[in-house]
Image (cartoon, rainbow, N blue to C red; front, top):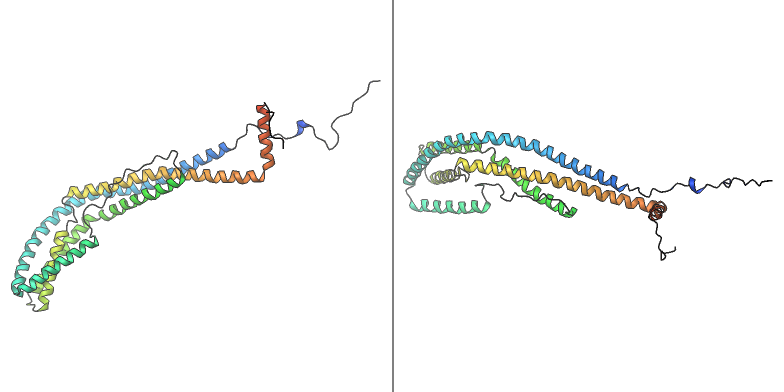
Length: 299
């Protein structure tokens, strides 16, 4: 009678076919790469969108300021010319009224001293736009620490350009205010002189005239023509544009790099918690590759 062999699968025992096997070709790191690429693209898009709105607003202001400044300068030129003539007349008249060359000489020296102090203070004048606006936006192979440094440097230049632009954009109105102030002050001084002031009051009037003289010198704020002003404003706007273009790329690269660092840290933490599973996964890869070496370490 034939012997019947029993089922080798005994209670409490699972065959090798039933054991879960790690996937030899599984590499979830690719998911991290995709996620971090997406984070970088998202951040770059956010910065670009935000900057575009600000730049569009500044561009509109720039277009308006070009025409406004030209007209304001033409109007101011007439006031400046008339005020210069009136100032010279009032100075000569006041000198004769004071009738003391020593006082006049001292006031002139005092005026020169105050001018020197103003120069030390760095009184605003000329173009405030930065010439260094060719930014390096190449992020390939750049370390995260270097990306942080570039962001800070470009951000500083961009902020300076925006500050310059915002300061200059109101220049048409400010120019009109300055010339109006000159005209009004000369009228007040002329009126006061007509009242027959004497003594120290005359010295004070002379000081006020010297201040008006300084106002006339500084009235154009260092811009010799309308073109100088417009070019400076354009330079500030362009520098801001270049800065934001570079910052968008760098911010995207930073977001991607930070995501990659975080993902690497998470993977290391997971590895510590699942060493057995990782060991078996590596074992499965070696089985698939075959060719076991004779000198493999026997643990």
